[in-house]
Amino acid sequence: GDSVTQMEGPVTLSEEAFLTINCTYTATGYPSLFWYVQYPGEGLQLLLKATKADDKGSNKGFEATYRKETTSFHLEKGSVQVSDSAVYFCALSDGGGATNKLIFGTGTLLAVQP
Amino acid sequence: EAQVTQNPRYLITVTGKKLTVTCSQNMNHEYMSWYRQDPGLGLRQIYYSMNVEVTDKGDVPEGYKVSRKEKRNFPLILESPSPNQTSLYFCASSLNLWLATNEKLFFGSGTQLSVL
Image (cartoon, rainbow over all chains, first blue to last red; front, side):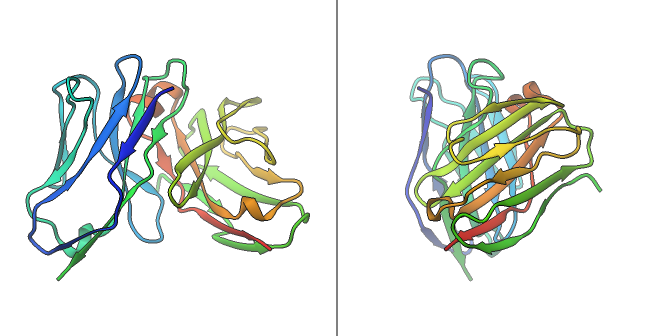
């Protein structure tokens, strides 16, 4: 079935460092791809999304490009801040088809130190 | 303010004692869902509801019940909790399934449940 694989954390970076969190997926169709973020003590929030190949989602300085050839949707940010410390979840859906849900990865904890 | 409200935020209980976790949304959303979050496993869907009186099983429904008598409320019921149901639970909603899976899910703040 459809699945999402994320790099294991925690990822520990210094402020202003470059961030990459890897995400690859397995899907039979043409899924929509998402990054959700969970700040400490809060629920998940949508960070960005892409619904077709070569689309780039972006928000708050984060970017991810839908790469069909490598089945990847890696999250990047050029300069992280302490306030970016959170758990990041990659997710996919088949757009409301057979799965009727979002399929989430295991999450990657990012800790940014001043 | 548009939001999904879960209660309680924290709950400690003992094996076998029935409990209910409430979820309410004020956005007139049709689609609602429950997830549990466990270390190393991410979020897994327990149950979902497409509309009033329409519910269906997710990936891990065993040991849980839900009901959808009103559009705004989607309680999660554990009739006889066991320690393996110790987890962080999230309720989520969206206007409809298409928007949930193409646009955005709105999440509550979570309920940390410990079953002793």
